[in-house]
Image 1 (cartoon, rainbow, N blue to C red):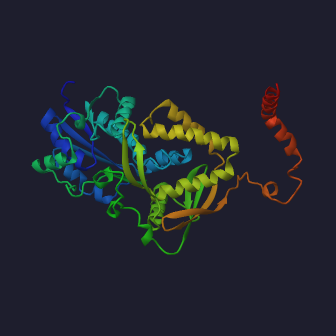
Image 2 (tube, rainbow, N blue to C red):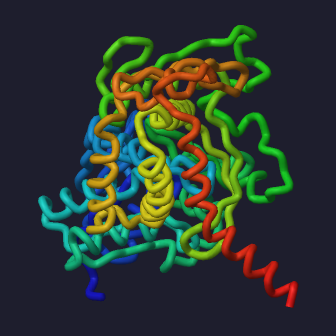
Amino acid sequence: MAKPKKVALAYSGGLDTSIIIPWLIETYGCEVVAICGDIGQGGDELAGLEAKARKTGASEVHVADMREEFVSEYLWRLVRAGGEYEHKYLLGTSIARPLLAKKQVEVALATGCDALAHGCTGKGNDQVRFELTYKALAPHLAVIAPWREWNIVSREDAIEYAARHKVPISQTTTKIYSRDRNIWHISHEGGALEDPANAAPEDVWMLTRSPKEAPDKPADVTIGFERGRPASVNGKTMPAVALLEELNRIGGENGVGRIDLVENRFVGMKSRGCYETPGGTLIMAAHRELETLTLDKNMAHYKQKLALDYSEMVYNGLWFTPLREALDAFFEEASRSTTGEVTLRLYKGGFQPVSRKSPNSLYSVDIASFTMGAAYDQRDARGFINLIGLPIQVRASLKKAAKSV
């Protein structure tokens, strides 16, 4: 690869990307354009970001507010699909990477960059998610992945490099968790969490109260949906970002949304992480409950099958693909009737549904009631069972005849 002259770096201000700016300049003698997307990671992470990037050598810094796009065009699609990886993970990091990489490519093309760089390690999933997006949107640009090139082999090495180059960082050798935060969730990896035999220390958690310290009184929250998309909280229609922030507050106060997960990474290894998704956990649960009213059996079961494929595609970074777009078209059509409200009762880290309502409900009290009525003739069940059981009956007859020979 010819030495690039101008590199667009996906920049977060964290440990890895902070040291990548001086490393790129030292290694390639190039200009560095730092690009950061505000996807709800919080003011603390964004405060002073531009000044820090320039101080460490960036010639340009672009910070884009992408919260509305992230929630409306990415997270709500995930909700509509019922996306959940390996029974637990609500894909908070996975779903954000294609959007961040897309913005990086847009800025790179607009500013005349001839290469793209990211701070993902050679062991993780994120390198795949970023680079598959690059291939989809700007296949002609060179890609630099410092973790696959430099001689830094640990986070301790990275901290030492930052100290030598006077790069300000918040990580220390005694508090070395790797975290990724956005408006949907925060992930925690590294440190004591690397051994799955260790219980997660209480100081890991940041968005949710300990269930032991949550209120002693249950709290009810009602989430409204329109065509599968979250639309209201407690009867109040809200914009997407404000809605998710409000549910994050409610869920966090009640200790909802913590998971401790050993997952199978796309690159072939297992990893252990802790995730907090307070609002997202409530939304996904309420959406599932609403679908129990609005989807017929065949649609519900088929949607569950496709949700597994969709979740794996999101996890593996295959967002900008025809198959993902086709699946989204299916989920959009499948969710046409998913309008209504679900009330969840929260208590010390747990919750349960207490009410489900929809103008499109397929639930019929007349049919489901134990009281006999004209809407359902129980005598019809005999023929139904006979037809379904015919292959079973024939096989049993053959077995019986074979034994009698």
